Length: 248
Image 1 (cartoon, one colour):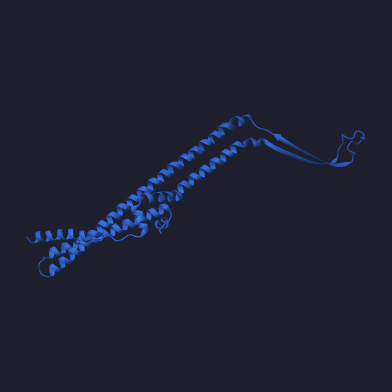
Image 2 (tube, helix red, strand yellow):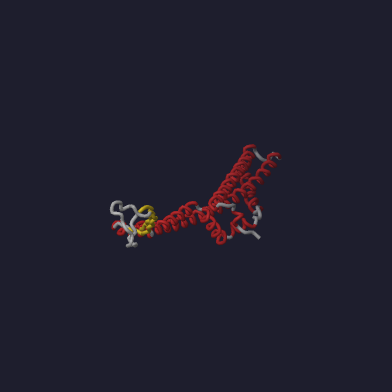
């Protein structure tokens, strides 16, 4: 009969304890973070997109594809060459018709310098025929890089939203276990008092102490999970959450 009385008092104190629990006021950034998802989620997503290393790789691939397209279009210029030359010595001046030529030594002429400049363009038919296909291939690689970035952005948004939901759940669990710990603390005090007065058996007091110990451990575990989820989100966005939210 005594055990049933203890259980009745225990559940009564549980209800009383939950009724007396008051939530601690949050700071301004925490209020915005937990109560305004439509405001905080776009900020978190933008920060995560900026911090994403995978998207940086996509941007580099797009830049490479653009460069390759430019190179493919200018490939015809590889067949264009500028030739220059310089010579000095005895040579016949064909412009001067009055110049006499020594029949015995035709090189017995005045020494002079001569320059020449010219352009040369050569292109194989294979290069000419493959140029269009080469440009088309690089354009497809560019589209592929752009599509990969869109997929990466979608994945980042998904990761941020899921992590935000995990934080909300972890916070709810923490508050639940904190309330349970407050109730267990009240029951522990009542059990100790009744044990001192001789109204409670040892095993009943030990049950109250065990409940309090388990509730305390549950709070510690829930707090650790909550903080870990916050740290993971900060790792995703690349900055502390409170720095992201502008507070008045």
